[in-house]
Image 1 (cartoon, one colour):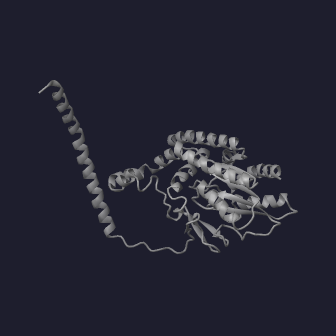
Image 2 (cartoon, one colour):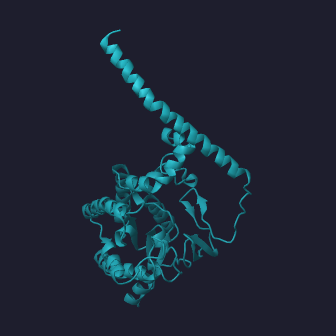
Image 3 (cartoon, helix red, strand yellow):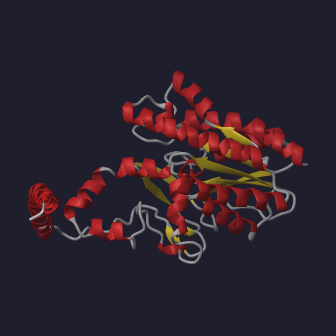
Amino acid sequence: MSPASSRIRRLLGRLLLLVVPFALAFGTVELVLRVGARSASDGEEPAAVDTRWLKVEKSAELGWIFPPDTTGMYKSSGRHTPVVTNAWGLRGPEVSTDTLTRRVLLLGDSYTFGWGMDHGAGFVRLLETALRDSFPESPVECINGGIPGYSIYQQIRMLDYVRERTEIHAVVATISLANDPIDELRIRRFAPNHLAYFSYELRDPASPSARLIAASRLLTLADQRTTHMQFSLINTNGECRSLADESLTRLANICREADLPLVWLIVPRAQEIRPGGFWRRALNGATDRLRRHFLELADDLRVPIVDLKPPLASVQARQEAYLPGDSHWNEAGHRAVTEVLLPEFLNTWDREK
């Protein structure tokens, strides 16, 4: 046997000494997890369907939306949001269709929706009150187009949805740094013709990696334990950012072509405002780069933009700006958002008139 062949044999032997114990350990843990899961499932009773809560319905046009003309409680992270929907399935009163009312459409996700807030405490209704005080001579209406979980792509679909039903005169749209980029990646798996089948998986369920993880209890457990880290890393990667750019650019072009004043709101991650540990501080650096990117995009597209980090940080320095144990704003946070949005919105509206 040549010296080269002997070295290869020794190398393969050492490799087997490393791989075999690992494979045996993996197989043992996998077997234990499968047996344990089977034993636990044997004694489970079918979960009863709780009909007390208001839930969204699937929509081929939008992905999901609340049922129309409904009153109920929306369960949100352990607290309950009272919701009254209008004939279009949006939170809030019926929307007028007359030619005298000036209507502002506010687009977004759970922040615009008013997660955890009573009807009048979210910034949509607070802005409406402020605008009516600013224009007492003419009726003004704010339409809450925010639906929990919506992506920027869905904001565009919501804009089309509302414009088909009434005339609007201005738009406010949100960019949530916590999840909008990754939501763009997830919604595109189902857009444009399969929105009603949307699911929140981090990776495409049909991908080889997703199928491999689903086939293993151990890999599934490891995947679940690192979901938050994976989510944050994917949310700031280049692919997600590019998809968000595409939707934001399209939204800006639609509004420009329709002569609709548009203002963007950058919604910070709650961890940027609240103190946190090492991992949170590390993620804040990536989030800040994402913020600068969207600020530059707004400048390139000449879209007025309001970064909500400074006003929310100012509130947080004096009092709590967020709901307990939640990443959504409380009443003080919504008031701060209204106060910083109002002057920018009025300036934009005046420039467009």
